[in-house]
Length: 95
Image (tube, rainbow, N blue to C red; front, side, top):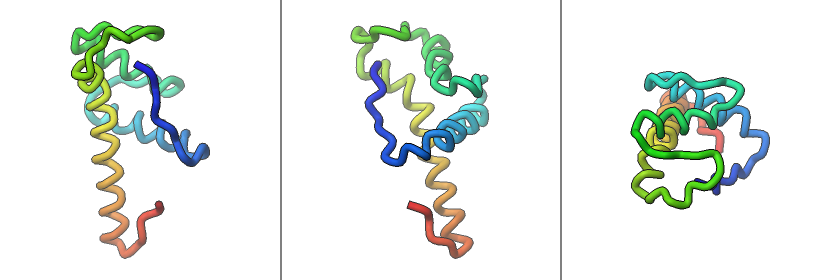
């Protein structure tokens, strides 16, 4: 499963990683702070999906979605929550 997502602002990597750690901890996953990407292996193991660090060409789209869904979906929910909070306080969301 190749990581094809590109961060448009390179300086945001650390904050996005921290958000990933926070969100995954909120939903009950133990995340290694030095390697937030390792959470996907814990999720895959929990779901019984064979995920390796090298070639995952045999994974179906459904399997990949089951692994990435809890991560990306919850990060999006958190970003929406933060934007709504900023709007409610009269601040413009930082884009």
